[in-house]
Image 1 (cartoon, rainbow, N blue to C red):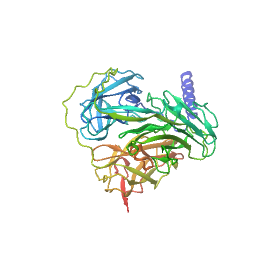
Image 2: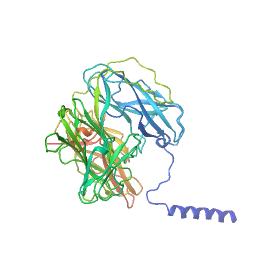
Image 3: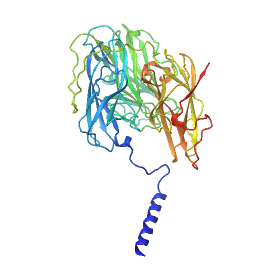
Image 4: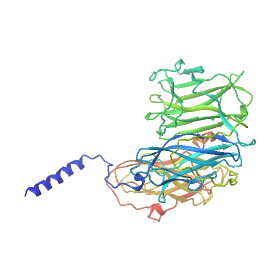
Length: 508
């Protein structure tokens, strides 16, 4: 009798514990993706947009953390997609990396021989299983370079002007009037601050200094910094990474990069209105704006942030490492002495890199045709998500292009699926995919992108501003609550969402 009473007590205690578990909590086994998972820490060298001469050899180093539950004992760096830049295979073999430890990973690369912007995507691999970074350990990390025209190997990119270092020389104002720099954190009149290593909403360590802009706390509040005159040379570029500060979840701002030519009272902007609008969503954006149209002129540059959604309460926006870069020819080729602990990759014979694409892939989000953000479904409910896009690039999206899952909650969708129609430049298209609501209550978001016929991923051009790149993901965000249902698809005759390609309907 006593053992039975103990057993009954155990079951009663277990039932009591489970009754207090919040909705959405599920008990399950540790997946392979959790076992092998990585976190991007920083670019040790070659930050996005670094310039090289055609055919120039260089070494790229990332700092990566093992944030999974398994030790890395036989893990390699592998090329995944995009521009290979003569990367060997495997690109590098890592040493043993303990759980939560970090490692510097090197790969020797060669800049393509033709001018252009190139991005190579890499992942890690163990026993044939590829994994990467992000919440699902499925996203690649990358190297992005610019190959300049002319010159010989040895072109060096330098910082011609550092906006962070010169912030104190700028004239700071907000909607309430003049400000001093640095300001006081929390000042309702607005403030600007310098951070040596600010943490943005993507929670990555970029190991770069930056400026925090907080508008005056009022409806449509703003803050701006007007910098002293700077003489622009041909080939100069403005570069920065922008996004809300980590944990500033109410941040919703408009970024503007403006300028004033010496002797003129007119203030102009590089980004047409409406400006680039940034809302706290876990993503940041790399700005790479050519300044060649201003060559030979003395320019006052203006960095500006304003509240977009009415009140500025909670708006904390970051310009990370804002700078003007300049590429010179000649001089010694830059060399790196990374603290990599892995085995250096074996050099491979230099090959002729493929020429850059003769056209560009750019997409503009038009609207959610179905399932707007926050739509509620019952657990296990089947639904069809439809987005409308415009092809604002110069490449035709053929049926060799794919819709690909990038990160977040997959909701039963495929890893990749081909488009069913071709979409010419300047045409719009509705793209649909079948998904299934998760089985437990909660809020779920899945991020998606495109992949072109060369295997290069691309996404949206934020607000149609080319200087902000083409890597913004689009998503489906739903809420799950209520009584579970049996998943059946009515929009399409195929009931298996993981094997159903996205349906594309061209618009006139």
